[in-house]
Image (cartoon, rainbow, N blue to C red; front, side, top):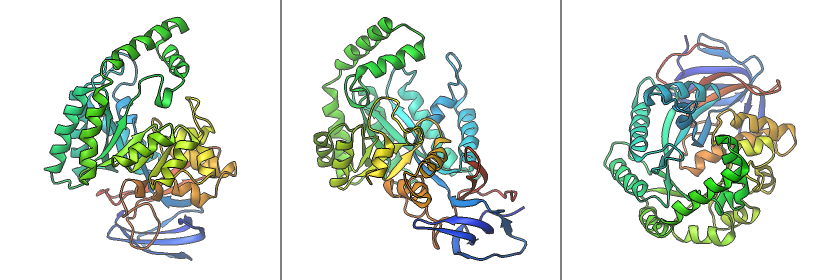
Length: 396
């Protein structure tokens, strides 16, 4: 048995932010990286990587998979505790050591979401983060439906609770409006096709359902200004980190920056991403988009943004394994180098959310690491170690 806080890894290709150290060695003491160099070591605390690639543990700033874990199929709802424990193992197996669980603050029959469930999910995530048995570092991405008064009320209660807690962190909040006809689904036909596929209805029924959804949400269109004022005030005071979700244009980005938003998540156009960078905002794209080479909703491709230097990080969105899948696809297809691709799922997102102690295999950083085999048709995670983990782990 080897302690994750006191280990030496040898026989690996170490991916640093700028280059790859072939046949390298990395020394960890008290959960902190103490040495990164070429060469080899031997001893009782040594892990032989057998030629695999050592990268920092992945930092996922937006994962909705916990929510999907508790509802694996229509009509089936699993206990939250089971869902989080089940998903934690899958996330770790995908190389993730830090994750932000998307929690939707809205009351929606359409999405089977309630504010009561949102608050319960947050409470459980907080508890798991403090648990000595946690395998990864858990955080909350607070996703606010800007047209939902109940969602805003619940979010403000939650943010007040975090301020008064021992967590002492700036909560991450996403300002979101998923009304068809704007944002991600500016072309509502994409949303209609999604409804048709997920609900097994014909195109005419899908159009009717989308019409009904727009009509219901338009009743609360004026609430958007109230929600914006509430979260932007907290952002201006430095009490939260605020992101704009699915920005579509330079004007929208400019307005978002003016009210304290510092992150542009999933920009839908080259124009929006470029404007965000010009305004000093961090940008996040979807890993499934980057891996597949196209957006599922007809918007700008993540690869185009990466090639243009307009993407600071990738988030898994709905499928954790796409983070490493994107790394392999980007390098195989010549979009960027391995260090650049790895940076998009490690130090890039870590910097975006203000976690400056992780995401790099460099001296002084947290020893969150994943040993990955990139020689197969898809990446295979051989071993993961996290500073957050208090348990002993078997060497590969």
